[in-house]
Structures are given as structure tokens and as C-alpha cells.
Image 1 (cartoon, helix red, strand yellow):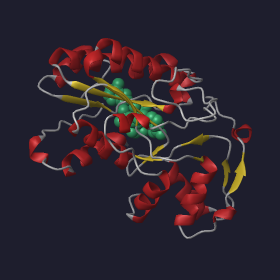
Image 2 (image 1 turned 120 degrees about the horizontal axis):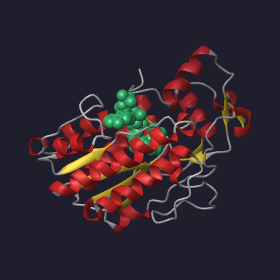
Image 3 (image 1 turned 180 degrees about the vertical axis):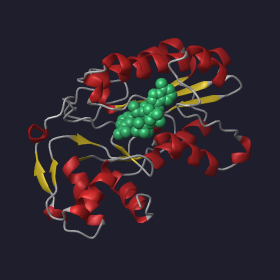
Image 4 (image 1 turned 90 degrees about the vertical axis):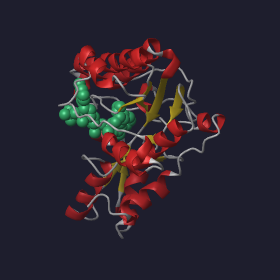
Length: 278
Ligand SMILES: NC(=O)c1ccc[n+]([C@@H]2O[C@H](COP(=O)([O-])OP(=O)(O)OC[C@H]3O[C@@H](n4cnc5c(N)ncnc54)[C@H](OP(=O)(O)O)[C@@H]3O)[C@@H](O)[C@H]2O)c1
């Protein structure tokens, strides 16, 4: 989902003639293969690692598989990037945090994941930095939606059309819905500004719950948001625990002289108005 929007953002950013982009799927490169990572990265200045084991619930029973891709894979790319002096952008997640903080998590908050997926991504952050400390950027994101692949917006749009008025959505998890296109464009701005290392939070600004997110989607479809009913996570028991409050702070951008990403509602309205989910 993110990888394809990264390709589009790189193609549409100013001076695309200055960039030669090599987009790779899993069929082209298995990031768990260190030799293959070395071959794929040779000759490149920047590596954007949008590959991951993202099945959060499945990871509870397949933690080794998640760790192999999310931690060993990240480390392989970091080592290969270090060998050629390339900058590595390692995408990470709000799930590296426990979600019990009263205020947004700063970039340097201690990691305390509560799920196997979160542990594998936290380990990926640590191993990538350790293997390539001079030029690894950890870019944490959350609650992604976009044009490609199934996601919450697409699911809510389908459910709304199938059974208008009967949507029930959890209201006790707080986070930041984030459009992959916004994150991709922010990534390009970050690289163009010369950032080469550090930790940044690539989420749309503000915060809501899944219920608030669903209400906004229904409202944008011309429906009545009051028909979306709130419930709590206990009613939707799932294998992996989710952080209750994983809102991320954005101070890191200003420290670099960069503007944080726009508010989540503006991004959602824009994405739906552009019809990217049709
Ligand atoms: N989606 C979210 O809400 C969310 C939230 C926070 C953070 N993130 C992070 O954001 C990044 C992008 O997420 P996304 O939602 O765009 O992910 P996605 O749509 O699930 O894409 C992940 C891609 O990684 C590929 N992949 C898996 N194992 C691989 C391997 N060993 N070698 C090469 N490629 C491999 C997958 O290929 P196959 O499909 O063939 O397996 C898939 O194309 C990830 O780092 C994720 O952890 C996502």
C-alpha cells in the first residue's frame, strides 16, 4: 500500500529526472536474503523499506516469521545500505508503544510493544540503527489507508453501502488515520531536505478513534454520522492487543525545519474527494 504511493510521489515530485527509482516487489527481492539485499542496493543512494509482515493478528502465532521479515529483513537492508553509503528509511509503527500514555508519544519515548507485531517492528528499529547508525531514518506511521490494498476506509465504504445504518465501531482506541500518499510525499520532502538519520513520526496530525474515523467516512459519503454506533474493544476480541492510545507527537519535523503532515480529516476528505477508493 505505501510502496506504490512512494513510487507515485517520487515520480511526481519536482525534478523526477534527477532520480532513478527501482521499485521492487517481494518477487524481485526477498529482504530476508542478505546477499540479495546487497545486490539490489548496489548503486543506490536511498533505500525505502516499505516491506513488512503486516498481519498484526497472525503475528501472534507466527512471531518468528514476523521477526524474520520485520527485524532481520530491516537489518539486512541496513547492512547493505551501510556498505554503499545509502540512506535507509525504515518505516515503523505506533505499535512499538504500549498505548498507555496520557499525551502523544515523543520520538524518543521508550519502546514497549504489547503485541508480537509491535515487538518485531521495535526490534527492526533497533537492528537497523545498530547496523547503520549514520544513515538510518526510522519513520513511524499508523492507521494507514490508501489507494492500493484493502484498508479501513475501503472496508467502511463497502459496509456502509451493504448495510446502511448498522455500522458499529470501536471507540476506545485513539490514533491517527494517515493517508499513504501524504506519508509518501512527506518522505520525499524529508529526503530532499537532506535528512540522513533520526526518528520521525509520519502520521497525519490530530487524533481520533476508529469510531470517529468511521463517522467521518460516512459523513463524506453523504450519510448521517450519528448512525455509526460506538462500542469497545472487548466486543471485538482479536488475537493481538492494540495500544489504547498510540497518538504520536510531531515535534521532530519542526526541529529539522520541516512542516508536519496536515490534519487527518483534511487528508481523508481529500482522498475521498479524489475518488482514490473507487
Ligand atoms: N498498514 C498500516 O496501517 C500500518 C501502520 C503502521 C505502520 N505500518 C508500516 O508501514 C509500512 C508499509 O505498510 P503497508 O500497509 O504499506 O504494508 P503492505 O501493504 O502489507 O505491504 C507490505 C509489502 O511487503 C511485502 N513483503 C513481505 N515480506 C517480504 C519480504 N520478505 N521481502 C520483500 N517484500 C516483502 C509484501 O509482499 P506480499 O504481499 O507478497 O507478502 C507487501 O507487498 C510497513 O513497515 C508497516 O509495518 C503500516
